[in-house]
Length: 246
Image: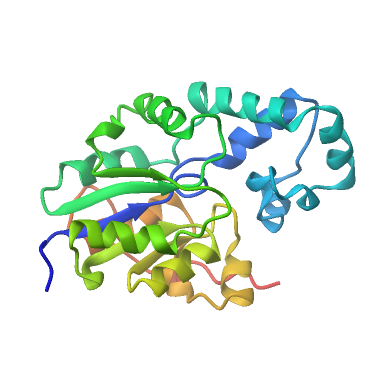
């Protein structure tokens, strides 16, 4: 039924592999704006999509954004992504392992909002000793489009069994897109949506959610048989920390 025996992993960029909060915080600070702490940032979960989500901002930021062109803010954010933004701890090593694994097809599907986003990601990943040309795919989709169609198209392009296909994401829409295309979701709660929002509002099973990038890396390595590494064995985060129910 399928032309490939490989596994497929589709990575998300902002909030899953890239520390987007720190980059956005720095961009706003450059324009004299303060977005608040990360907890409040996660509650305004569409903040990165500020080109179309201005209502997500506190009134003082909305007022100032009208004075300081949003185009200027995007330009600043682009420079920060290219020169300063970082991958979350452990992610760079994981991606290099995934690229080197002969039985894994790996790439990125992103809605990054910077100027020329593919070039932005090329520069960012290169600073972490990763050549994105070595990925099997890198796809940018507009903010108004869901990832569902692209997930399905990518899986079909490589002829991978849905049971051997995985995605990583930090928003409930990533989860829905994965389920809709028959893929297994690796979800994280350190990005744009917090653990409580993912589990309580959208009823995403806590067993699928990693609270840190270290845990995500461990889950992926275990699921994709990347071998025995110098790290603690896989453990479900629900046994390590109770859900943050408010």
